[in-house]
Image 1 (cartoon, protein in one colour):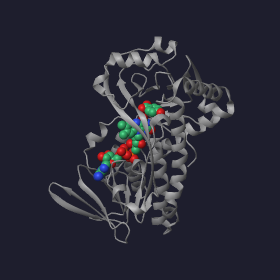
Image 2: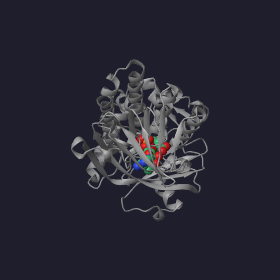
Image 3: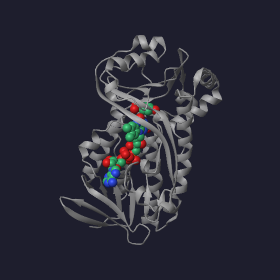
Image 4: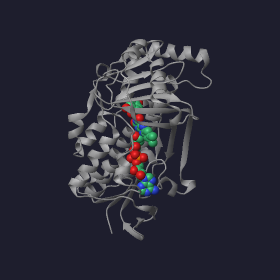
Length: 389
Ligand code: FAS
Ligand code: PHB
């Protein structure tokens, strides 16, 4: 088999890249080690930067998002028993779209099916080969047969635990990592959200986040310890803890109900440099991870795709290598600014082992300043809505 771009990974990064390439007439094949249903069973991000919205529109996968998604003009920061709205639209002229990653993935899969592009699910032992030479290829196993796909380029869209980054010679890559001493326990429940906008709460007991997937489906999180297990948290314990971390008027107004999804996600910051090795490009979580506090993970995957897609389009249309040669530096410049923002918001909003009473007062003072200074609020808002590509 032969294609122009072999894409490893059928998550948001791989699917969005594949759809943009297909619409530009650039042949591509996506391989994933799991099934389509397994991917659609994962619950992850919930907030899209408007740049991501634009790319989904360009990919022809934005209709349901505009019909069912929730444009948000602001969110609240809650601390010291009160809450303050960050007016995203008033401060930046931009908004975000609340629309679950699961739905983004479903829309991209449907668009790819409609375009007749090839995705090979449940492909075992997918391996990139000779990406430092002129004839790269990808091998994989399916139904007991080993297959080979010759290509011009390989896009490693296979996430943090994928094969692409691990295939790079150790001496050719540098990684940067910070592990946070806590996780997020998240639930999904078909109950109306406590507020029409998101609430990020700083509390001495720990961080909490009130988000949503629709006007009838809530997505809630509480900071938990790294020793916590999902089975340690009944719905009753979860909602009691969530309400204790919110200002009283929100706690009183909260509708509770049975969760149908409950999971714990660890938090880390991670960046691999560079993001390109010959004809192999690392894209999305394969190259970087951020704590979800700033809602950047999925959105960084989208901006990586933007840079790589335009570089590949230039290569095939104008025989110019400028875009693919610039990919890593351009992507990393935006990645690091988003990694900084995600780290900063995580540091401001969470209870660390060494926070103590003094640290809590410092966090509350910073939040008090941030929510009463237009300059500080604007700085937070322009990072949250997404820095320019
Ligand atoms: P993905 O991990 O989504 O996709 C990678 C794909 O590659 C997967 O389908 C996998 O099966 C496949 N793959 C892996 N190894 C392979 C191999 N060897 N061969 C073939 N295929 C392989 N971001 C937010 O903004 N907000 C959030 O609240 C949030 N919550 C998250 C919760 C969890 C538990 C996790 C893990 C991430 C969360 N994220 C969140 C980040 C998440 O949304 C990612 O940024 C997003 O999925 C990145 O998309 P991809 O880069 O496509 O990687
Ligand atoms: C979510 O809705 O899952 C969500 C929203 C905002 C975040 C993280 C997660 O910062």
